[in-house]
Length: 418
Image: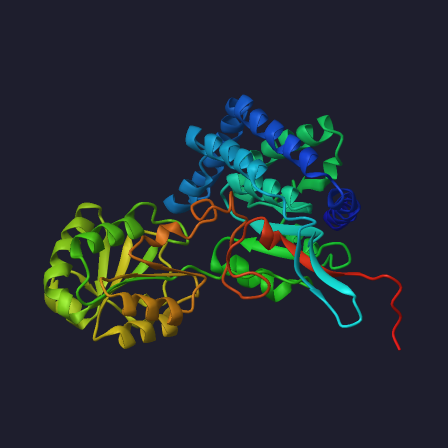
C-alpha cells in the first residue's frame, strides 16, 4: 500500500472511531486511561529498549544534545507518562458540560454544550512522551487522534502505540481511536495535511521550521506555536535574591524546552548590582551571555548581542541580556521581539505587576515566578497537548477543555417562529 493510501485509510478509520468516542462514557474513558498507565509501567523495559534504538539513530544523524535530551526515555519519563494518564483520569470530563444558559422572551431555553472536536492530527518531533500525553488528553476529551512523531523517535512511538492499542482492544473500544503513523517518509505529513474531509484540527509540536511547514501546507486548521522567545523582566526595586533564583531556574533548569527564558531584561537601576551576581551563577552553569552595550559595559567579558539574538529561540545554554530604561522599554522590547509564549516580571510593586499582566501579550504572564511554569501539568490542566501562541481557538497550554468546542442546544415546549 502506498503512503498516500495508508494515511487516507488511517484518516477514514479515525473519523469512524471519533463517532464512537464522542458517545463514550466518562467511566469507560477513565478505565482505559488507568489500564494504559499500568501497562506503560509494566512495559518500561521494552519501551526503553526501543528508545535506545532511537537514541543510536539520533547520534548517527548528529542531532543536537537538546534534541537527544527530548528524545530520551528515562525511568522518570515512564513515571511521568503513567502519572499524567492517572491525573487525566481524575479530571472532570468536559464533554456534555452545559454552560451559559439563558431564556428568551418566547421561553426558549438556550445553552451551550461542550463536544469533542472530532479527529485531531498531531505532528511532533522527538519527545516520545508526547505520544502518550496527546493520546490520553485527546481520548479523554472524546476525540480520535492520529499521531505523527519524528523519524528519530519511530521505534519508541511504535512501542507506545502498541501498548495503547492493547488497552483499547481489551476495553472494547475502537483501536483506531488512537493511531501512530509508522513510516519515516516525510510524504506522510503532506498526505495527512490534505485530509480535510476526515481530520478537524492539526496541532504541530516542534521547531519553528516544522510548524511553518505545517501551516504553509495544511488544508486543515492549524493551532500554531512557532517558537518560545520567553522573557524575564527584573523591575526597579525587585527582590534581587528572588530575581536570581527565578532567572537561573528559567534558563538553566531545562534549557532545551519552549518555556525556558531566552532574553533577560534588567531595569537600569538594578543592573550594576544584579548583573555581576547573576552572571557568576550563569557562568558556573556554562551559560553563554550575549549583551546589549550597557550590559557589556558592566560585564566586559561577555559577547555583544547582535540584532538576530533578540528574537532568537536558543533552546540551549545561551542567553540574551538587555538593560532597559523602564517598564515601557521592557514591554516595547517584548512586543517587538517576543513570540506570545511566556513573560515574567520580578517586582515588588503591585501596580507595575498589574500593568505587566495587562500589557504583556503572551499566552502566560507571570509575576515573581519562573517561565518554566507555562506547562499544562504545572497549571493544573493535567498532561498538556501543547502550548498555543495563536488565539483561535485556544491560547496557552491546551488541556481537556481546549480539546473540545461548544454547540448550541435549545429547549422548547412547542414554540414556532412567526
